[in-house]
Amino acid sequence: MQTIYYNGKVYPMTSEHSIEEAVFVKDAVIQAVGSTNEIMNNYKQSEVELIDLDGNVMFPGFVDSHAHMLGYGFSLKRLDLSGAKSKEDVIEKLIRKAEGLPQHEWLIGEGWNENEWVQPHSIHRNELDAHFPDRPVMITRICRHAMVVNSRALELAGVHSDTPDPSGGVIGRDDTGLNGLLLENAQDIIHAVTPNFTSESMTDALTLAYEQMTSFGLTGVHTEDLAYYGNTEAVLDTYREVLTKRERHFRVHHLVHHEAVDDWANCVGSVDEDSYGQTFSSMKIFADGSLGGHSAWLSEPYRGEGLNRGVPIHSDHELEVLVQKARNLNMTVAVHVIGDAALAQTLDVLRKHPPVGEKKDRLIHLQITSRSLIEKMQGMPIVLDIQPQFTVSDFPWIQDAVPEPLLRVSYAWKTLLDHEIICAGGSDAPIEPPDPLLGIHAAVARRKQGERHPGYIPSEKLTVYEAISLYTSGSSQASGEAHMYGVIQPGFAADFTVLDQDPFQLHNIDELLSTNVVYTIVNGTTVFSNKQEK
Image (cartoon, rainbow, N blue to C red; front, side):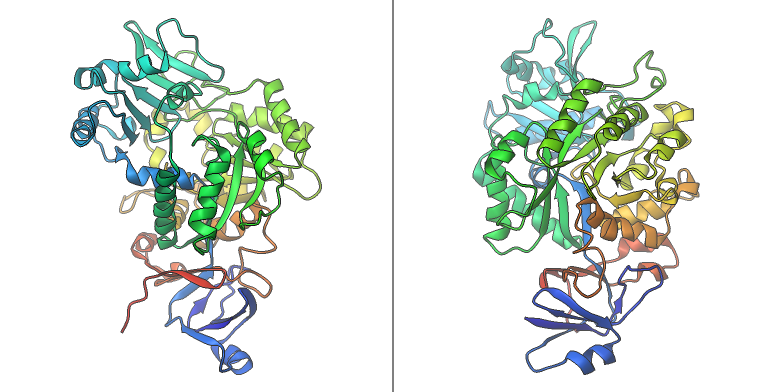
């Protein structure tokens, strides 16, 4: 199959000011890039399909470097609490949802965020019990590092006042006993007794996620799903069924949670591409929790929290054992690090056990850093998975939670790039919507749309080119696939995102949020079209 895309603005993203008009593709590989006249004169033949870009703007395919694709799909099916304005609003939404459920079925909601409430008070087990004394209830915080459950859920899980905290987790208590709050690994106690996921439910969820993500202009995603839905092979089979077997083109790169890595090794066994087009490279490890749950591991205590500096998930020795296990499997590691103490621990271990050859580990989030840690990262074989939207979601409330000295070099996207540390852009969906335009806007503006201030820590703003590069060349370097994706030039895969506005020519960066995706093209195939017929 041969295709010419012509009469557009084509940004190859090989340098900041490069611009072309047309692309020639053969057998899903870019063959030539140039002016419309040049490409037409050299490659137009009777069997070549012609696609008029009609002045629209083509980029290398946008890839979300860190998300939970299957989890995002399930979030589209569950009760969404992200818009709740108070705990009373949360409970009202739960009551309405329960009206449509069988009598004793689990009531599950997700996305509550007390930092968006006028009175940011957490929900207590007793408040859920007052409305749901017999039905188990589980509501997960937006960060997914904390949940609140009612007494019935605790009873089904066998949790009582004398149950010890699990390793890397906290069971919430107060002067009434259990308060229903579960942090980090303590959530697994509840997950173990919630209803099993079925092949049908996973298929439906992944299909929803695919349809939504491609409509956002995403041509691929780096996802981490293999440890949360029972059987690792069943999750991989769902991806094969929804994408490959139904010929839905989409680049899927899996991170493999360390708790699922043995099952994965038994059913896949290689970091190479499998026969269904999915790729693998990194073992996923959590080093700490979240800022919203006050469980991210900091070098100083949270404001007003006494001695609480967060939750280290692993001891130095435990983390080192996991990294060594990854190396024995010929894998890199992808470590969740939000707090600066977690980052310091992780860097020390990675320096002792670097990846082999040209491979690079990845560090995920890095919201709280320091000058010394950034300098330590410089030159290390790492790629950073950052989530620009966290800047918009976490400010201004983060200023009341994290000590001011730690915020001076935090969400430091510009400083990281200036130190020549590779950064990739992701959403952590369903934590944030997997819309790359939201991420690009957040990286450039560092404020919500329409807000009248210069942005949070404005010295860390990125240029439009730097922000877009997070989702193109940045993501391809994170997965070790920079030789195949991330730029528009001969020899690279024909993955494109086409927009109806030019992000480089906007008068106000807020206009980016009214930009529409015209085409999403993966492997030379149009998987989403919003083309308006004239």
